[in-house]
Image (cartoon, rainbow, N blue to C red; front, side):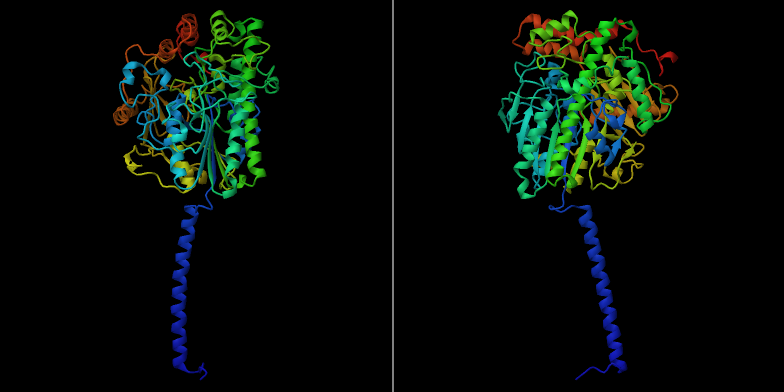
Length: 617
């Protein structure tokens, strides 16, 4: 029987049915919308991005073009244009502690790496967490990603342990080629300081012999591409960690890259420091009118004779060439990902492990440094500087320009030692070519990577053992709104290295730099308005200082920071450890001691930093 549409009872039933259908449909739609939003927030395995973490070594704050450098870095400039560049990002003041925090999100002291092992004294090594190698109480980001289906690769400097169970192949990286030491030659398999009898390279956990045509930046990108291609067919995402040797000592580069910077540095370090400040200001990296202080380890360029100025300019030209060579090979990796259709789904994170290195002697060709280099089989002559068989390093004077407009450099807790570039980029990121001035810290990298991958942070236990919790923050909110903060105004972030100490809170920072370069006094700075750390606010804001000192005391207790032994000095301890570890001649040890202590002897001779009006630039 056909329905009677004119029947009032039928009409009522039809309306009721429509209402019920509408309500059910709305509920289903709302549920589907919620599921969609959840899927966007938590990437499914097929949607998860590839992640490339690129780490430069000893790169200064303004050593790349997006941050104000004269060095041509087109690959990094292109990345900056496809993401967010961070102007207030901080890391550790030397390499191994930085790498430990970068890969775990845990403070270096708790992770077992309060300093590089080469600089730890016997009093410190009595404590289990002061061994300078990554502890079993932390989990690397590679382990967490591998457990959720990521392919994990590493090619480059590790420096977190060389025992079989401490190598990256046992810390979450499925394919590796890794330098276990603090550094090594960039042209061949040889050590750069006599604490090592050889350059210790490992591939997938086994000792490895470098190829004859080795140059570090080219080789590491070649291996990264090889690893990525080995599993491309299964369409699983990958995490590639690419820690370059550039621009760690010895500073070396191919001739074609060196040639591009010949003549660029002929006006000296003061001119370069001022030029970089001008460009960084124009780019918005630092605010207009930022003051800087001329560091007391910076020599008088005009007082040098013509031959010495010529040699110094060449040392820096090799440095510039090494930075550009690194960028060139980063560009090769990016091009390969584009050609293989993987670029659009890849997130790139680029940063440095610490600020500029200033341990190079003022005169590389003087008797002590030259003899030390010769004993290790290196040359220091002008014509071959930076090439195979040559030893090179920039001096504290040019290191201050590499850190421009910041004060201090590697090993010290001034901004020049801790503030470095950070670029997070990718085609799928919402903002392009913008700056974030929000404070961020090296422990933020691991939680950020986990967030990109849709991987939860570990709990109190992992792999059947208790682990230290991640303390860093996810910076992804800053990729949506760079003006936001991820740290609260009163949230404190502490740091310590060999008695040098710092604590960040809001826009403020307290610092304690030990002699010889520091004065052993606590100082207070507003690093947003005064990144050059020229105006000590300790007397103007005593309450702020005391509040932050109290927060630092809390940091030392919670992170098991040990006091340094009486008379401790990083470089002196390195020389002592070399003496005990090396099988080389006593003459070489003496020369090494002269070399590593040279910059600090100069600092003692020169007038202490007095912050006179004429010192401000």
